[in-house]
Length: 345
Image 1 (cartoon, rainbow, N blue to C red):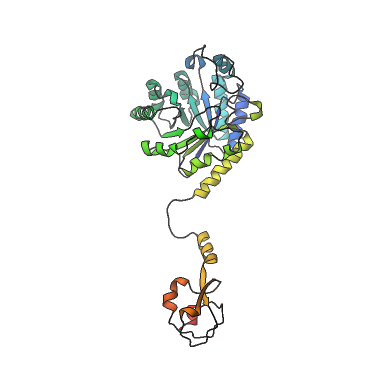
Image 2 (image 1 turned 90 degrees about the horizontal axis):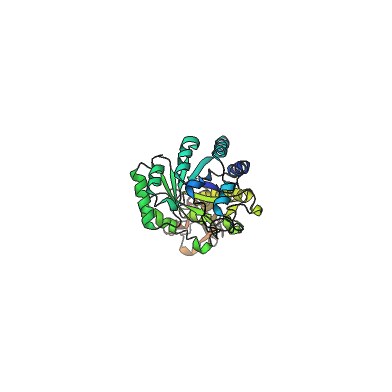
């Protein structure tokens, strides 16, 4: 993940609501918006969750808290055939697959049938050593989502991953609280993660997708060195499908991507070198020049009182003042004439 080109992941999660055709529509919208990758969750529900897992706030999107979570997710879960169809469509569209397998069965399916460009490890898996080892052994670049994990869990997970041949690592700061409040975002912690663990870092932004600031807040992460920004995308927020709270509609997502790409250009380089052509042009326009402060006769020995500094098209730089005082004018000059070396003896 290049520091100059931030990887933008359009996180679909469960926004497909059980329709592979809708999933492909969302993926295509993400590609058209300029996203680098589409983020998906692949889950074998019986392996991942007990059937009697309780309902409640923060477990599924608003309006569905009363439902039996297992059955609800099972009803909208895409089949393996659906995911194979989706993966083929994504490859045809030219967008990378960023897959979060939620269990060993799903990971095995991904390796045999999907072969994504990136894996995602949720923080909930940081204490599942067997699962971390299995992901590491794929050798694929992996994003560690650290929301809700302790520093000790992150460190242990990274060490285990590396010890088992894991691929490139990115730590992704942020968590989903349907939606996450601004005061809980703490984007500066992203920098702390980089300082502590020495790996690329990024932001998974989950503030309210309906708030105009949702397209701007990730720009803060960009300025703090993010190599990856993840943002939820949905087909239509008004439908209030699963994971809609932090999601952007396709048009808003396109604007968000445009903001990030413009931000990359604006941030530019950290190092200093020769002035750019643009800076040289500005310098030529804005700098003052040495001009005659009053009429000066040929043969006059110049004093400081003869010289003024004004914005002008012609004239010596004020930086040369000490070398000009005491020289002799070899032509008549009137007030505001630019003074050049050719005018002096």
